Every structure is written in C-alpha cells, then in structure tokens.
Length: 165
Image 1 (cartoon, rainbow, N blue to C red):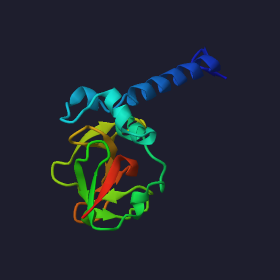
Image 2 (image 1 turned 90 degrees about the vertical axis):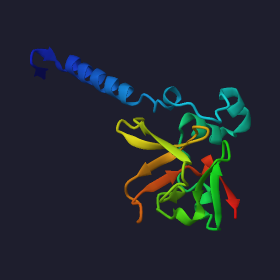
Image 3 (image 1 turned 180 degrees about the vertical axis):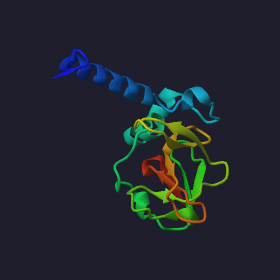
C-alpha cells in the first residue's frame, strides 16, 4: 500500500520515529534535581550506603514497589509515617485509608512535609510527591480520594517507616 507517494515501510518508520521522539521527550524525568535544593540531600554515594536496594530505587530513582507488597498497607495503629530516607514526618495515621490500590494511601500530608512536581514518565502528566526535606520520591497524588480533601496520596511503603504513637 502506498501513502501519498511513499512506501508503507518508509511511512511506518516515520511514524515510529515520531512516536519514539514523543515518548523520549515525555519521559524526561521530573526535573526535581535541577529545580530544587533539599536541606537533607546527602549525595548519591551516601544515599546508596544508607538505603537498601528497593528503598534506594524508589526514593532516589523514582521507582515503584509492587502493589500489595508493603507491610504498611496493614498498619492501622496510631502513629506517624516518616520518610525512610531522612525520618521527616509525612503523614498521620489518622489520615490513612484503604484505597484498594495496593499502596498505603492518605488523604492529607502533615503541614510542610511534602512538595510536589510534575512527572511525565508514563507519557502523561502526574503529580509526583517528594519528601520536603530530602527530595525522596514517595509516590503520586490523585484527585479521587475521600472527603474532606478529595485527594489520594498513593505512597510507596518502602519509602516510609512507621513510628508508633
């Protein structure tokens, strides 16, 4: 089949190249390293020594843990969820709820605990949640949560620790 005087193969390669270019541009990271300085940023080698493999992958490389893999999903005691990288207080257990997504979810962070950025890693914009102190990737926030905020802070459990009240 010919498309406007070009071979099918050539047109297909052109469309493929355009698609790959769009994905590469959309997949450029969140820009958090270039955009912000965090008070507790230790530098790459110190983070590698401090964090285990999966925690490093999530917190420092903006990875995602497998759904339903975190013991924090079943944590229902009164206390505070803190950053696994720097111990910054992030969420009160009073704002935790079961979203059914497989990740610990909250409807509100503690005041000043987080910052957000735009993440294009999946090819469309999402709101990335970062620790305000160390810049560690915690997860994402969505507008499908419960009242009173309507927000779902969908966090990676490996990015947090729980401190019993």
